[in-house]
Length: 275
Image (tube, rainbow, N blue to C red):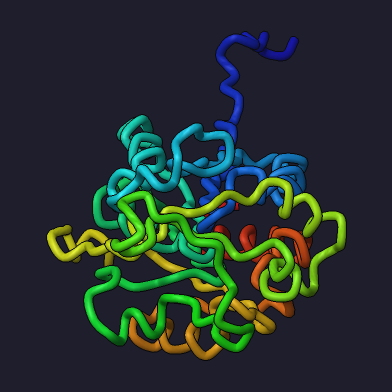
């Protein structure tokens, strides 16, 4: 007779854990921006977390009361702190969310498997020079002198503390290739962003080597009217990532090209050994 097999002794192969994506919105946005991409990726078995930065999405803070980048980015920093020592995530930052994931790379590089910059501000040290400002801050002057609705939380004689693109210009500037229903949704949910805090983002006292150890991928948006393709190219040239992908989209590919964007995020994860 054959040898009796003890089923308890048969070890099941270890389950391969799919990567954990952490999606970070840009100025005026919120976790809601990612609803299409989150749905696509979770349906494919990936873990996805979407962050609301301070004064954004459902966070109750007033943008005019947020005066430092550390304060604005605290929700992401708290999230990174909450990860266990052996847990690594893939950070994805859109637009000004690139500043958020760069700060995380300086402080929590050991917990980041990959940083993905999506039409994003990718400046190693933040806004330290005139070149940083030229490359990293949107220039919307082509749309007139009255593009933003500004808030002056420190007084009318002080620099503005918050800004939002005026509703009648949002589709033309930010969502020109996106479905009408998504730009309508955005018009209902966008909030003034803490521009004073964002413009103060500097990482000069951080661990630069830690940030350089984090692999980076840049996803260009070829019809972007906010962070223009030439600005994206300038930042890529100054701090080269390991890979650059190009999307035929406006500034908001999570609306205009969600399937392609999800595919690029999965491809980027595979490039660092995450499937």
